[in-house]
Length: 342
Ligand code: TYM
Image (cartoon, rainbow, N blue to C red):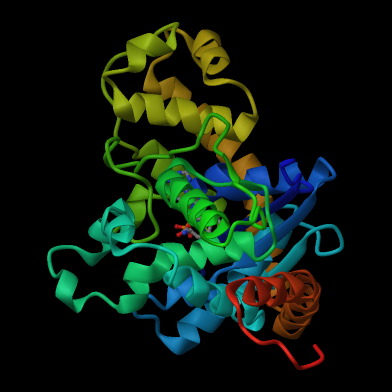
C-alpha cells in the first residue's frame, strides 16, 4: 500500500489564561510568525476550551482571549495570511475530541506529566477535562490534518500522544486518514526559565510577577525585572559548556539569543568575560527594543474589541471550512450514519 502524503499545514494553540509571557513569545509566537512568513498554510488558535479545564472567571476569560488575539497580531501574525480564531467557535474540535477520548487509553493519559503537575496532590479533585486535555489537543491538530506543530519543549509529551492517537486510529480503522504530526521545537529559547529560579520554567501561573516578563509590561518594568533577575557572581565564559552548571546565567544567554535571533554560542562568544552588571543592561535594552512595540500595539488593538471579535469570527469560518469535512469523514470511517446535507 502506498503511504498517504499529507500537504504541509501548521497548527498551534495557546491558552488564554492570564498574560502572554516571554516564554510563550520566544518558544511559540515568534516561531508562529516565522512559519507564517515562510509561506506554509498556518492556523493559530486561542484554546479557550483548554483554558476551562481549570477554573476561569468568565469575564477574565473573555478579556484574556481578546488580549491573546491582540498579542498574536501585534507580534506579526496577519489575519490575512494565517487563520486566527478561538477554539470554541469551531465545534469540530470538541466533537473530534470525543472520538479521540474513545481512542486514547487511560494508561496513556495517566502518564502525562502536565496533568500530574497541574492536578497536584489532590487528583480526585481535578476536572475530567484536565485529564482528557491531551485528547482535545490531538483533536485541535488532527481536525486540520496538520503536519507541523511549533511549540515549546514542555509540549513534547502531548505531541507524542497526538501521534499515538493518530496511529491507533489509523490501525483500528485500517486507514491512513490522520497524519503523524511532527513537533517543531526549535530555536535558542524552547524552554525559557523563571528569572527568579533557573531550574523552573517561566510561567504565567508563577505567583511572583518578577519571575516572568509579560508582553504587556512597559519598558521600565521589563528593564527592572532583568536588572533584578537572579544570577551568579562569575563573568560570562567564552563557551556554552561552561554554563551547564549555571542555569540562571544560561537562561539569560538563551533569552538574549532568542530575542536577537543569534545562536547562544555566538552570544557567549561576543560577551565572553562580561560581568552581569554589563550584560544585563544590554539584555534589557534588547528586550525593550523588541517587546515594547508589541506591548504598545496590543494596547492600541485592545481599544477596539469589536474589531478583534470580528476577526476571530472570520477566522473561525475559515477554520471550520477545513475542519468540518475532516470531522465528517472521521464519523464516516468510525461508522456513524451521516444523512444530513452539511
Ligand atoms: P500554553 O498555553 O501553556 O503555552 C503556549 C505555548 O508557549 C510555550 N511555552 C514556552 N516556551 C518556552 N519557554 C517557556 N517558559 C514556555 N512556556 C510556554 C508552550 O510550549 C506552547 O507552545 N497545551 C498547549 C496549548 C495547546 C496546543 C494545542 C498547542 C492546545 N492545543 C495544539 C499546540 C497544538 C498549552 O498549554 O500551551
